[in-house]
Image (cartoon, rainbow, N blue to C red; front, side, top):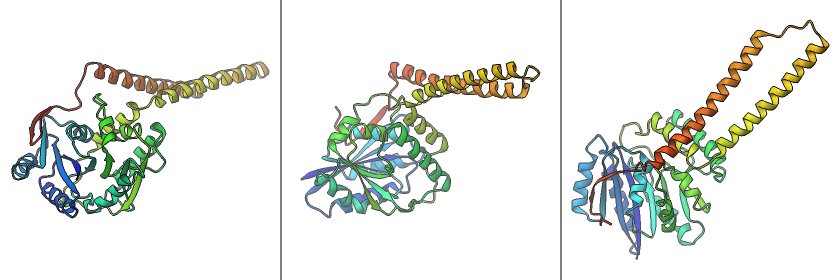
Length: 313
């Protein structure tokens, strides 16, 4: 019998988490050759989701609860769940009932056949706002460039992986996790499974705010690639070359036409633009150095306050 580990980060989901867990149990019970464990991570949610999780864990020892001492973000919460999984396959899903868990077997079959190491849902129509779609598309474009991710690959809110991928991912100990980057650097044998995205089971907006989206974008931008620094070097070289050629043009023009006047406005425009670019590059360097400093100080990915039904150690 194979064990399936479901990892669910929970934040503002007191109205939906019971439905998610019930669907998981009903789906896995369809096949006798599989057992399950459900690892829920309370990411310091301000609602009563932790109390609900504790009650569910009391009635079913296969439901495991990790309570974080403070809100660390979705990806850190997922890594906290990964640290205790025991299953042969690890399934990631959200807590808002949007993930179509009833399509679980479509995700597992390619893994069983060794066609790939990771499977992820591919939603033809995504149930999210235009603003969030725009942000997702920007993140997809940047991650393809920075992480050398397969073109068009988007990790959705329902995915599955072989256990060895999870074991490699949790070796990352720094405080700026970005799951897509961690998975892609382990394997590129990733398969997309077309399926339908559902509406949230509640009327609440997504807990993934603009600030969290920007923070996650920065993690992917700086934690797993030095390409931004290389781009800065290339831009610096191009601007230096442009400045040299433009200077030669001015000198030659002055020699040929002594009466020509040098334009003040054009000079100021060049100075402002180049100095702004320099400050931008310095800020990028500062971001890298600041993250290195935080990593050296061993800032934690997450802090576990309490665990239920989880064997310590």
